[in-house]
Length: 370
Image: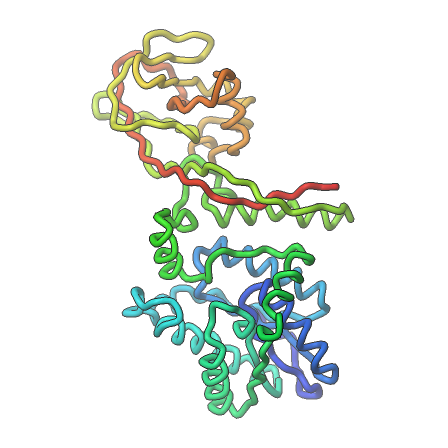
């Protein structure tokens, strides 16, 4: 955690634990409206959020929200290992059950500690705004923790009398990031299992660069467009895109049981490990006799891949856009799902190819400048 830059000993300040921007934007707006004589400071402490890329995206959106509202923000440490250690034994607890109670206490106790160190007179939490949380339980836990730290807890109901609808409308107007799961990996897995889906948030693709390797990383990357548009004072709208997401989880090209360095492009489909051979090479492309497998020589396609050298391609990868454009370049009469591999040298002997992957429909945000 950054050093605490704030000392509120001479102010009537409430420290507000913030879980996400959608909850906090409405919550802080109501606090300022209902308590005009109070000062407020946000505190982002959520080591329960997994993976880190999702945490970083939510933090970035909270900072933007606080900037819009003129609320200072203290950023807590990302103590994910400590949270996971303390959550042992609660992995299978249901939503709104014992694990959630532990998670509330874990974050609110830390909030009370920071409130004491910064000389705030009380604290509260934007968890109270979430329809997924038990409000009476949060009231009770907050008041109990406040007594332990000789503080006051500010209980605020922003849900009733159309509050939840107003919150959603405000979030849409402010163009906030609207996450689709609470935060922890246990609840995420359970939620995805009930929908017969894989938790792609927790799975990195071998064919994607680091900045887009999983869903939260891709979303964080996409939301940088919003930042650039706002910095240039351009108006825009957020829309949803339904996308077939491809996650490469394993890829192995071998010859005589020896691995051959290769980069497997996204949307390479292969139903089982396959033995094949190249029928002929032409203009840097090797055409195999099975499954439409194509081997491409790096030197012939490096400008198209936008990568300087083969080692960098293996280590860093290249953008999904470049990979999709490459597929279209090689075959433009339909969407090709042939395995496409980038290699450094021609392969003339038989080879084995083994690919494992996940494909799944997801909804992603896109930003349209007006």
